[in-house]
Image (tube, helix red, strand yellow):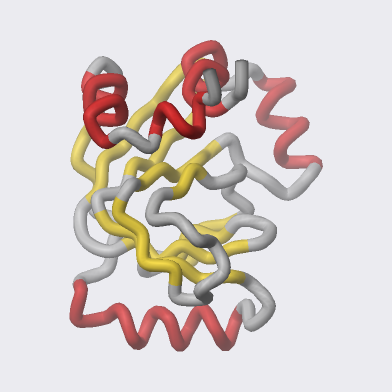
Amino acid sequence: MDIKNSLKSEATEKAFLALLNGAPCQFGCPASEIEHCLEQAELLFPQHRKCIVRNWKWIDIEGTEADVKSAANSELQLTFLFSSNVNDVSGSRGYDWIRTTMLHRFIEPALFVTKNSIYLLVGEGQYYSVSVKTAYKLFMRK
């Protein structure tokens, strides 16, 4: 079974993430600031795809020191974003959910930046901290 396709189901997403004890997270911007934040994203990263993301899940991976160092050597952090409520501003994705690659950097107030895309976090989300094993089950194909 393809994990990405199984996570498309909102019921599956909710059931799985409920087991992880997510906490409210306030990294998102208010809806009234979306236009301003998108303008900022375009100025900083004109070549990146841009998406507006609501009901998002911020997922930190509890990696070993070696995992963290390996990611840092690639200018990445062991952090992913998941959402089934996505508005693709760039029009290039073709679907309404995301599971990002690792975080490259976070720019306040609400820009989650990967190597290829910018995700504008809107409103409150959920924060999760998961083991490498759980992350593998969530994000890797079987």
